[in-house]
Image (tube, rainbow, N blue to C red; front, top):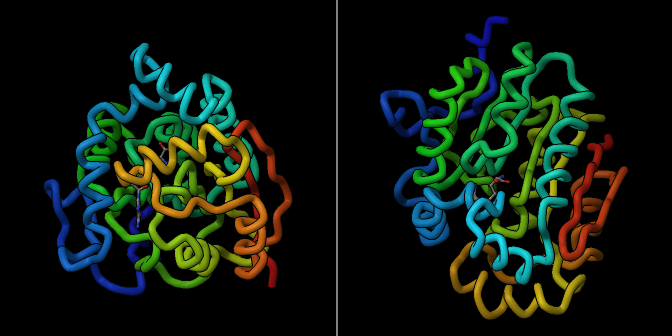
Length: 255
Ligand SMILES: C[S@@+](CC[C@H](N)C(=O)[O-])C[C@H]1O[C@@H](n2cnc3c(N)ncnc32)[C@H](O)[C@@H]1O
């Protein structure tokens, strides 16, 4: 598969190619939300350990804070596989790509699909870059972008994946509007997020720790608010599965 025409996806040019031209940067230094990017820069080296619970203390912390254990990891893998089962070839936007945990190894199995892995934090992008090199992946393009101001043309993606992203985004409705804009009609946004109002202990830890660390931004959406935002943005929910305070979802763009 020839991916040379990936430049057709962009509606503006990159500020700078960085990291030996391997990452296209569409978020200039004047972009807002730099504090959030810095919080994830700091967390980036330990991020995979935290999410997979490979470190015992982090595993306990995650269990208390989110009520989640291995089931969240299994659900993430299910979301990715379900999305990939719907596409044979084309282009997928993965935002926020994070470090490529769960996703990149799956992407390798789909050489006919070009994956645009977009992220805001340089730290997370560097970890993702390392993974791509180790895997020798040729179908993943790293892009630095703000989800609230995507550099892509309208209706150019065959799917958008937003795994564990919406609760981190500072402007949640703007992010969903942008993800819907770049999605083709009748194609789906897949993902997961933490919801407010599903588990009291999670709500408490959001207030006392996660918002302060800037890993989440206030306020997380409630289930009702989330479904309303999807609907306002022409995204028809076809599935919503709740696991403690987390939700896995698929929503299709309607005309
Ligand atoms: C909890 S991580 C999820 C990463 C990955 N999807 C995963 O499941 O491991 C949230 C990510 O959102 C990114 N992020 C926060 N604000 C963003 C923005 N405005 N645009 C793009 N990414 C953003 C952070 O840098 C961070 O990597």
